[in-house]
Amino acid sequence: MSKALDGVRILDFTHVQSGPTCTQLLAWFGADVIKVERAGAGDITREQLRDIPDVDSLYFTMLNHNKRSVTIDTKNPEGKQVLEALIQKCDVLVENFAPGALDRMGFTWERIQELNPRMIVASVKGFGPGPYEDCKVYENVAQCAGGAASTTGFDDGPPVVSGAQIGDSGTGLHLALGIVTALYQRTQTGRGQKVLAAMQDGVLNLCRVKLRDQQRLERTGTMKEYPQYPNGTFGEAVPRAGNASGGGQPGWILKCKGWETDPNAYIYFITQAPVWAKICNVIGKEEWATDPNYATPAARLPHLKDIFAEIERWTMTKTKFEAMQILNKYNIPCGPILSMKEIAEEPSLRKTGTIVEVDHPTRGKYLTVGNPIKLSDSPTEVKRSPLLGEHTDEVMTELGYSPEQISALRTAGAI
Ligand code: COA
Image (cartoon, rainbow, N blue to C red):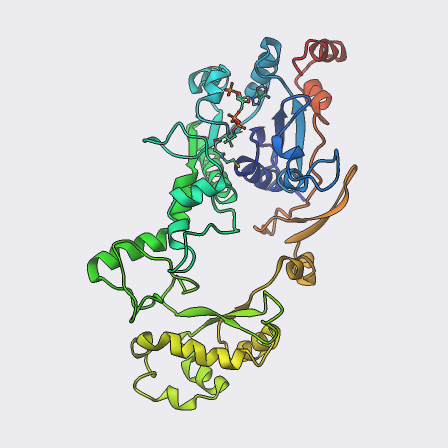
């Protein structure tokens, strides 16, 4: 079966997490992704957090599936010529170097346009134009500067970063959308363009409900679904909301049977208004369905803590899976807190390709996250990540280099 991005060639100049997330997605959709790395070293993540000596780390393998790897020293004059040949052949150049690195290499936007006016140049940077535009940025810096950390955690504790890599992987997702959008526009204009996804912007986009709340707070001085209401105090900025729901339906994380020993014996419970009467029935508080202090969403807001404490008395008598089963019968929205171990072992996620087992020549079998976006006409087949420079000769041959030329470039240290 054909793939959505068949025929699209990506010059993948990305490293670490944010850029590779983007190009891996494009590869899963069928693009030919040619990852350019430095000979001898490669993407730094190949050797970071290794669990097996001298074998590409899971950090690297899980972000670089379905790609080809070529080694080019792009600071070597002959290496630069190889890169120029690739620029002429590819549709998109994706990079997430520190600000200015591509220019310092000699590949300014103007130079790239000279070589290939149809080229789309897509970049992840930590910040957009402004006071921090020259800064190097990693995941947690973006979570902090994008508003996520100040709004995550509990009121009586410090800011907290999330395990979800919204700064890196989140921005990679944003960039991928920018790239396919630019490719679509190119079908009408015939021109390439620059695509920028700044990590601060990406995180803020994912945190937009907190900017919503900032303005609500400034207008009304309170937010009734926050745990600070009604007994705590609100300051000038959106506070950390613990496990309160970010939407209009109050929710909280509640203990389940076994919580004393299992750190994940918890359930997220949402007191959705349309099923309030059913919630009252399930937890044995039938009178709350008609009691004016509890019967309406507005009446419940000052009592949320008590309500969740009462519901927790019930959830603590059930395992998270038993509670799920019962609550789902009544369409009461809830979700178990799943550990990574439980997720890795979940058969339904294997069946849908959300978790995939991959075989690797030096690592053996390992699990990875498959494509979370499912296209009915462009199914994803997850292929192992490339070894460093595995495809250098193949790609050089496609560019028209003879075996003798390839060998001379290798001797000169250009590839
Ligand atoms: N051949 C020759 N040189 C190469 C090369 C190649 N194939 N690939 C990279 N380089 C060079 C670059 O040109 C750069 O050289 P310069 O500093 O002389 O200009 C150098 O390698 C290092 O690149 P840099 O991006 O500065 O790497 P770093 O390890 O110091 O910084 C980051 C890493 C992630 C902090 C930085 O790249 C960054 O801020 N990126 C943008 C934001 C981002 O994506 N962050 C999240 C990462 S998950």
